[in-house]
Length: 378
Image (tube, rainbow, N blue to C red):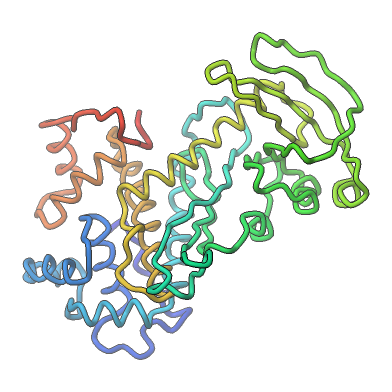
């Protein structure tokens, strides 16, 4: 817990009057209990209460001041504004990103590289009526902009399942010189033109029904998988009003799967093969979603209200970023998966954190599982 900026948390709680009507269980108590649940894979509020109750003599030294009871935690999840934990997660992201800024990626790019995508978590409509997705189905979406230097999320939006992915482009402030990689669900030329006006670059997979007219053809080496490299313009009146400048269309065939891809980008400098590889790096955000679903508690929720669900998701994100911060500050070679496994059984051990990791990793390297998704694997 020493790696958490407590003062920053109190500022977030004060911003939304989280402890204005304190009844013995503060926002900090709630965060500690929910963080414990994430790190030790607790299944329910009753599970959290029982496990923390078994080490009640140690809770005061951990920072708990209120009584950890199922009713207290349920009330806190309903009453304490989820934006407290969202803002705190953003504060942790602000700490983590500089730590991973110099990490190498698969692409030797000087520019920052972001991947934008969303994942859907299915819910029961009768329990979560506020998250209506389809006629007989509920869901929440987690929209994420992932910095591929360290796989740190820089923007996260939690919405009901009906919200379109493309609307998230309105929430992003493009960073000049950076690359944004997106799938074809984000095609909206009016919104993409904002990236061009902001001197930011995008690489997006195009759709078959996007009408384009070729202006110039550029020479390519087809042995690399690049089949064509064209300068194009949009042809429909509506599209050309939304995006009046030229675009670059690259056709690429993956040599492994023989699948054909067509990309649009506003970058005319990088080689066509590099643009194709930039798009391929988008897969990292898919791995991020799979990883957090496997190792954090975001598929089963402790409360059914919108506030409780968003609170749990944001605390899960903050724990993910916290472990990433610890990994970098302690200069650990272990993956996040290994760190989480060690933490899950040593949380209340009276030993320095670094010692716990050194002993855990020296005694066993935690056997590799080829089906296990591991980020930060060196």
